[in-house]
Length: 108
Image 1 (cartoon, rainbow, N blue to C red):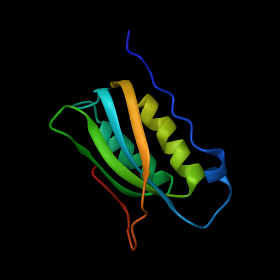
Image 2 (cartoon, one colour):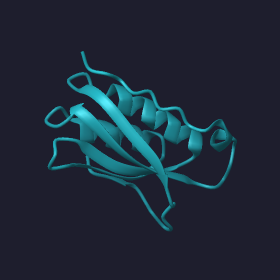
Image 3 (cartoon, rainbow, N blue to C red):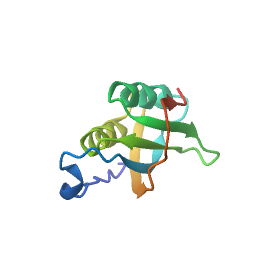
Image 4 (cartoon, rainbow, N blue to C red):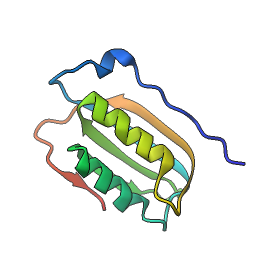
């Protein structure tokens, strides 16, 4: 059975703030050929996040997302589930420097 990794975000980062927070993420498992990129782009757009998602040559899906910390946390929860056809084994994420003037979410 696949092992799921639960990621907890630092609660201090979830305090209401106007400063955007950006993460880089990588999702492992059965995540290519199951609409994972479009699922991620749709969820990110609904959450008003910016960034991108793309398939990687090693079979994973990776990307970055920027926005309110609470919305980033919600996206990570979606990444851990994925679309119904996906089988998520692991989600890795870490904070990266926010990008200036980033607009939209690309990669669906």
